Image (cartoon, rainbow, N blue to C red; front, top):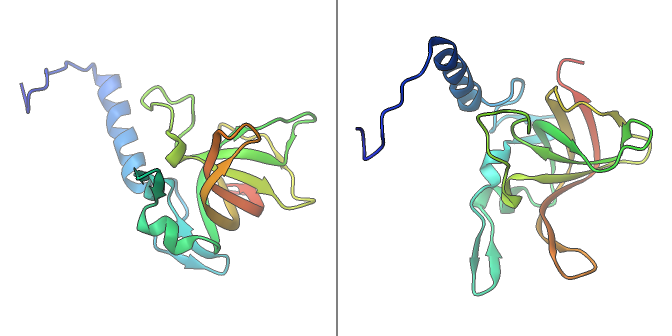
Length: 165
């Protein structure tokens, strides 16, 4: 037993997958480092947004989120579509790992970015491939018409493409 946790026996293929995924999570999605600055502005990793705290009913966002609020940023991640009538997406949620990953829990609301593409910027649905999104980043509580929290983070006027295109 290590740190009060039960030991687990892994098969060789499972262990290899675990090592691969730990490397993937350690380096992030290929292409952009978290502190890199490109012509499209600084890059952001979704994990930098986690940890929103609520104090006296007021959300307190991580420093990286407040630092980039209102700025043009680039983020890599995987898409969760928000309606795709003709296979083209104009709105989607960006998350760090694909929902189909068996080693990942569903992300919390502070690990999702709601993306609205700029007019004329549509993207084919690409859940199995990482995408790069560039747009104006917004941090703040957005509620729906019923007063329920809909999002904490958004990218508006964005463009997106599959990584490697």
